[in-house]
Image (cartoon, rainbow over all chains, first blue to last red; front, top):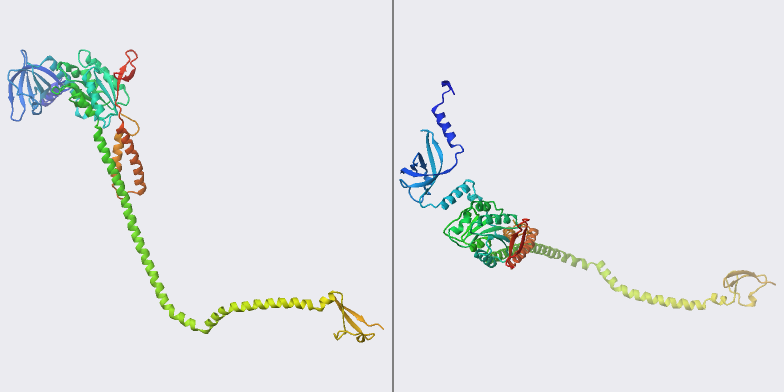
Length: 419
Length: 76
């Protein structure tokens, strides 16, 4: 026990009580009678809840009250869902209510469903952020339903019409009756073991409210929530929303609609593909014509540049010719030039004459050869000559003692006339 | 979940990307030609997938003892 020196402030007391009360206080459903119901202009409700033994003051804030389907009625029996709060300023306890359901007319089953819903909510399984998107082009879909029911036939029909290439893996399960929840959970466990599955449809055809009970089962809901692929719920009952619908990633009103959600329409995709093809080829053509235009522009520029050059060159040639013409004319009149021209014209004549002369010479030399004394000497004759070169033709020319030379074919020999 | 070679979804997305890229006037000729080749291939693949005609309906059965799964044609 503390002494007076360490006395608490009232604030500290109030805060401590608040903390002790509020920490870890669970949201609970409480059954009681509504008393002293007041609605304030702010939109908040204040009321008491009591039974035979006790009473608790309650608040229901505007945001929670907005979900009330009917105004709170004094004296009615209700179930309220809430948590304990301490209002610090008065250190007063208030039960903060988030939901009110009338006790009369609420079947035990509906209450149970509501309690399951609260638990799923508390675990975040109904959080919209958890919802997964369906793949745009599923190729393999798991279907959890009864193979004896209409649901599976509807799904097959729609799938074959919309997206024929799909593969449906059906996992049979009871969808109503006492054994249904356990079978559905087991079927979902099978789905989680299948490979290459894009999404899962779980559902059944239409039925009475009691027939849908399995889709409000907590274990089924949790199995749906933990399914590794997106789940489409397809419980054929448009009016009632089951908890399975709330947990599933997508809710379809009927099994046929589930198949429509799961699969694209082939015609839509064909149209999209056709549009893409057209856009693709169009852009490609644009790319080509763009380059053609660029090429044409370049060619035009090159062409005109070349023409410019050609014209320039032509002008210069004309100019040069203009200047050269008089000079050439002057040049041609000079005598040297005319001589050269004559010589050029004469040369062929001279050549011919030279040839002829050469031929004549060759002929003459052959005749001369035949007449040559050397040729006679070659046949064994000899020519005697005096030292003065005179040929000794007669015997009188041969005076004894006279020297002479004897010319024979290959030389001369010195000789003397003997006595 | 499917990790099969480029899915229809991937083909279509890539084609859209290619079309966007081709809108660029300053695209290099080389790149444009590569994109053309790729685009034609993906168009063909997508068309082929669209043409798949057979819906297969299988039933998955679980062996009560071993827990092993097997599939067989439904209603077969």
